[in-house]
Amino acid sequence: MKPDFEQLINSIIGEEWGIFYRDKLILGKEVEGKKYRIKGGYIVCKTSLNLKQLSLVRQIMKIYKEAIKLKRDSISLEKIMEVTGKLTSSVGWKETLNEVLKTIRSIIPGKYFAIYLVDRKKKEIHAIVSYGYKKEEREHLYMKYGIGLVGWAIKHKKPLIIEDVRKEPRYYKVKEDTLSEIVVPIIAGERIIGAINIEDNRIGSFKERERRLIEAFASIAGLVIERARLYSSFVEHKLTLKELEVARSIQFYFLPKRAPRLKDYLLYGKTIPAKMVGGDYFNFFRRGKSSMLTVIADVSGKGIPASLLMSFLHSAVLIHSKEKNLVKIVRTLNELLCSQTEANQFITGILGELKRREGIFSYINFGHNYPIGIKNKRAKIIEGSDIVLGVIKDAKFTVREINMNDFDAIYLYTDGAVEQSCGKEQFGIERLERIVEENWEKPSLVMKSLLEEMDKVCGNERDDDITILAILKNAGNR
Image (tube, rainbow, N blue to C red):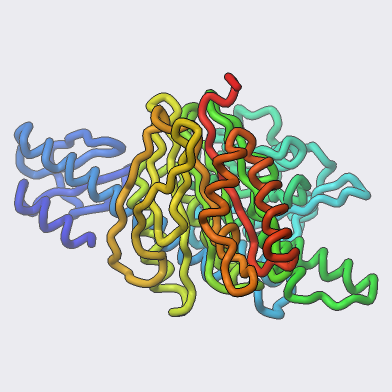
């Protein structure tokens, strides 16, 4: 990739030039000449550049930085998939956390790394694994609950990005040369269990991208810790830890406990588990004050493999949640699934963005059940879908739009809501469509009515999870 961009710039300004960011050469070569400013750095060229040449170079560098970012994020997701796969191994939980930390070190800029756990009985926080600290310094990685940046992030369940710790009164000094720091809490459901902390000897080393990546790894660390906790609990009670319980804990670890609020709208999401763990997933990711990213998906398979594939999906969407282009997000997910997973693993789902001010719900349907819209109090199937993720690497995806000015509500759901076996037939889309039409103003009532009718028609032994995600507009006016 680098030689291609250099060759392109050569064709515009010749071969005697170098482009620098933070005084570091990133393209071209060391030369003496006139210096020109470009965003985030400068170009040194032996010959003078006219405005047109400079403008073209700036455009090329903008594309180059975007290409580097996409490649970097792709590598990050591959790393996440690698470490997620190790959750199924019999390796001890501390060894797995060391693998998590090792992987973080390979993709996040930083000098000192640590994963902290909370000891509720002693009201202390201590580093369970760390890197970069001397033996005598590791003694200071034990602190009282609430002390320092790590203690604050754990106490308040919020991440922290500190550009310059010298200006931060909450900073607890362990390393003399630390200038910037980032802390991301590890949360299991509603319970705070620890934090990931990274320090660096440069100012402003950490941005939102790093926060999103570390949050993905915090999810994995949380799974490792929770699995160890569950195992200990079962051993104490002389019970066997079965795959079902492990898979269930992984699945519900990633699901939100409640839907976020968005002005002028009511958001709803809920998963009802079957006895055999499926691969249902839904979530919401805020994109500023007036936009919300939504996702509902069903991964192939059952048990731990399905749950781990879901953890990859969660991490990938989390990392790319600020990416404005939905097609880019879905293409990246698809390419990684095709290259990193087995042939029989795939994901169906709908990734969408609700723009409150515009009243538009834009979405990509990758092989999932069609949405049900409510228009003039009548239910309507909204058709249109692309191929599932993980089958064709260069698949094309289409963004579809629903004008929320034309609809009162949109209901998304997984196949468990329509494909439940009822003797010789399935529960069916017609039944779900009628239930949504009769109860659409209250999503919780839709779910309740669906379960009641399914129990009545099909019996209460469900063979797949049921998930519903709903978007209702002007909810405060009803």
